[in-house]
Length: 448
Image (tube, rainbow, N blue to C red; front, side, top):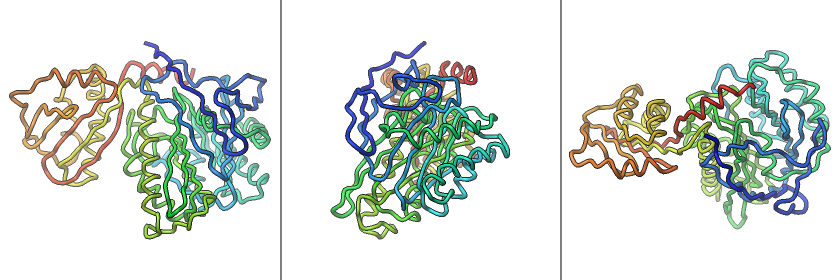
């Protein structure tokens, strides 16, 4: 069944220069011929989609988009974001051992802590492409670094799309040449351009007070399938004007990742390209944050964690074929990490996910998933509920259990599932989506 496309208002806010009116046509450069505007990401938008928010301009951050033609599609597929000199950077990367050259180089370069540019290619992941793939990434880094007069290690590159096809060097070079001359674009256009099977652009805004200084956050992310919590689970980028040392920015991002991106799953598959980067330009002028003891550090870290949580939720809400957003709260585990593993065993169970897709309160499948998680559990202490209504307590179904309100809860777009292991104080929350025929259709046709 095709999803009806909701009306999503435009909210083009450029990173620099005068504002662009909502609904106006954003200028962009198509190397394969002129077009009026970027095409929609999909004509079948997720029923869980949210309108793209108004994201604040971040001083020192200027995005541009062009069409390099990595795939035969009528849309932009190369994003170039220029960053002010001295911008701090932190990152988390996939643990997939068959990762792309972009991930290898990004992981190596993140230790120097500074960034001048970000390039994101969509339509080709450039993974499993050997020396040719690495040469293509190094070419992009050298090309941008030569223009900006910076070290190549300060140019970060991400690619997403089909695995096993080397990124075409000629298209990459022409695309970067065009991007370096393109007019700045708005955040929504940048969010659309980094997408692949995404059905809607994803962005988050936040603010925090560091002393008397207000700092801003704007963030975009792509992700819909091949989503599993083994570091980051997609391509995500957070930009802030806060003054933060690279070391403390890395500490905050790593902590946020553990409670957000590492707690979501769509299909249990960890991508070869997963990357989340945070950039801090320092333009807000606050006293630099260098450790958790710096005044305002708690406000900054809380805001960054909130941004990551919202981004993670948006990815799940655009899970391939998703019709329901599922929150799984696990308590009573022997540790928080054990609770997270139990939650993920439930979230990754096809039987649990299809039951929720069918609006069936089959809590026996949850029992199965808890038991296979490989974590401490006791069937005689286990309790399971849906939407705050317990179906089973301490290893037994409730005598007065009424399935009607649970069935009503499962008909909604957002479903909650509660599990109490009854063993300790460990707890965790993970998020996933249901598993529908749509997931099969999308992935069966992905390369066509």
